[in-house]
Every structure is written in C-alpha cells, then in structure tokens.
Image (cartoon, rainbow, N blue to C red; front, side, top):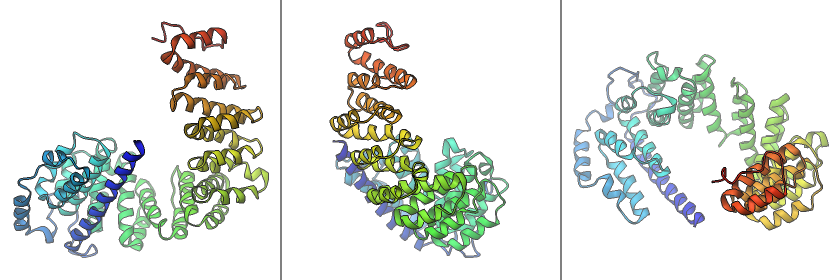
Amino acid sequence: MLKTQITLLAILIVSLSANAWQWTRQSVATQPNPNSNDAQPLAPGNALQRNPAKADASAESATRKEATAHVNLASIMAMQDPMERMQALVEHIKSLPVDQIGEMLDELDDSKDAKTRFLTHLLLTRWGQEDPDAAFASLGNISAKRNGSQARAILEGLTAIDPSRAVAWLTSPENDARHQPWMGLGLARSLASEWSRQNPEAAIAWAASLEPGDLQTGAYLGIVENLMKSDPERAAAIAMDVETEARSEFLGSIAEDWARQAPEDAIEWAGTLEGHERQTAMSEAMAGWAQEAPESAAAYLDGLPADERNEHVGALARSWAEQEPGAAANWLGSQPEGDSKVEAMGHVMWNWTSQDPEAASAWLAEQPPGDSFDRGAAGLAKAATSAFEDAEAGVAWSSSIQNEELRTEMTRHTLQRWMRQDPQAAQAWAEANPVEGTTPSREGSK
C-alpha cells in the first residue's frame, strides 16, 4: 500500500514539474531580456514600477478573470480523480489573475502537505516574475523560520527574468532579511543557483564581488550546486574559494555528488585535499560511488592500505545498506575491526532487519563477539522493536550486548516498549533477568 502511494505521489510531482516547466517557458518568453538596462531596481519598502511587459496587462487580466470566475479551490479539491485534480490545480495557477494570487495562497495556507507546498512554490514563483513588489510585501517581516522558503521562491522567480533586480533587492541596505542568521546565505544561494542556470559567468563574477560573509558563501554554494550537474570539475575548483564553518561538509557533499557521475575523478580530487577535509571528502566519495556501483567501490577500497581503508569502510557500508543490506553486511563483516566499522554496523543491521529479520538475525548470531557485534545487536533490536513491534525479540538481542553501558541503554529502551505491548510478560522477564536501571514498575508502564 505504501509503495503504491509513493508511486502515485511521484507521478503527480512529475506531472506538476512538467506543467510548471512548460508554463515557465511560456511566461519567460513574454518577459524582457534579463540583461537589459531597462530593468528597474527592486528595493524593500519602495513602490516600484511593474515590469514594462506587464504594465498594460489589464485586458489579459480581465480575460483570465472571466475564464476562472466559475472555478475555485474548493471545487477543484473536491474532484475525485487525483490526476484530474492536480492537473486542474496547475491550470488554475497558470490562468489565475496576478491580483488573486494572494487570495489563493491564503486558501492553501490551511494545508501543509507536500502537494500544497509545491503549489505554493509555483504561485510564489509566478508572483515573483509578474509582481515582485506585491509578492515580497505579502511576506511582511521576512524571517528564516516563518517565511524564508517563500521569500526564496519569489526571489527565484524574479531572478529567472531579471537577475539585476533580484540582486538589487537582496543587497539593498533596507533589506533586513539578509542580516538574519542563515537568511542571507539562503537567499543568496537561491539567487545564484537560478542565475547560474542562465549565465554562470555573470553569477560567478557577482559572487566574487561580494565581501566575505554569508551572502558570498551562499552565492558560491548556489553556483557550485548547480554546476555539479554539468561541470563537476569546475564546481569543485570554485568550491575551494568558499569560506564557511561547514566547509569540510560542503566539500564532502561535492565529492559524493561527483562520485555518482565519475568516481575515479572524484576520488582523485578528494585525494588532493588535506587533513579532515580530505578524510571527509574521501568518505563521501565512497558513499556516492556505492550508490551507483557498490561492488566496484568495495573492490577499490579493499585495495587501499589498511589504515586508510579503515577510515572509509563505514561510509561505503551505510550507503550500500540502503540498497542491499545483506551484501553490505557480508562485506562489512569481512573488514578488520575499527571505529568506522563499529559505527556502521548498527545502521547496516537496522536496514537488513527492517527488510529480512530472519536473515539478519541468523547472520549476526554467527559473528564473533566485540564492539561490532554489540552495535549490530543494538541496530537489530531497534528495528525489531520499531519496525515489527516485536519488543520481546528486541529485549533478547539487547541483553546479548557485552558493553555494559550500551546493554543497559538498549535493554531499558526495548523493555519499556515491551511493557506497553505485554506488561505481564515484560515484568516476568525483568524480574528473572535483573539489569540495573531496567526493572519497570507496573504503575510506570500504564
């Protein structure tokens, strides 16, 4: 049932994306050249002129109002066929008069599901293209927590047709949003990502012109993320200019994405880094490679010296376990004991137990005692308790852990779940197998 729902949602999103792409092409075709000198600067708090191409749109607006007068959101949402319903929503957004976008957003605000968020993004993107003044004004005082994603959608729409106006709005001294923690970085990231789709050279020049700080970091992040799809080598070179506290994680993300396309190149690039950045990038590259060709990634890693291999076996195994947990467990079990292996074993066993608990249990029972076994038992116990609601099996595996601290923690966790499912059996087990801090009272389990 869950797979059917996921499949249906994927089909709906693809349909929405296709329609949105077609609509954007039609909309952009009517806009002025983004690089034109006729663009009006956009600054918060100022009453700005509308886009010249939209200044005389009264006739078009009247036609749209007449076409949509008999349609409202409630009637569309009442349609029984989900495909027809989503198609009608997209068509309604395309034909909705600009001055009614705010009203429809208010109607959608009551629902927070994934489809509604997508439709909201489409509405705001269109609003940002056709009337950015009203769109930004509708947000009031922009904050990352309350309406940061909405501001980014508007900014992306404006950037697609007029990057210079988008830059003017973002960098205006009157724009308080860019000074908020993470807000300026997120807005600059969205702007640069959209701009670099059209003119990467202009976007890079703009990023380089900014002073070091959140705006510049966000701009480079947006450019790099977009270039990774077409020119990962250049994206990696640009990333070296990014100064951020999360630089190591950022370089690791590049290595992972690059490894999905060209693993050898990604590994070679990661090897040019130093210290913690090198270790993170190499591990993430192995994880990305494992998503596409886990056996090849494992063969490469097995050829490395033992001390270097041990740093990355966990990243590869965790990624492999998302697809083939049994194969990942067999390979991980063959690796020498080490911190990376120990940390990954719980994740691998959790995934395997969630898919095939009998096979996972049989395999783990044959493994030698040690830290890896303990982590594996903890992962198996968690999966048995949560995925299958078999707290009794979870307690049994938890009590097999040798590490006293981990055994106590896991036994307490699984025993509490068992008490909610079968208080008498759980109480009897706890009394027969006393473990410090794990003997529950009947009153506490109610």
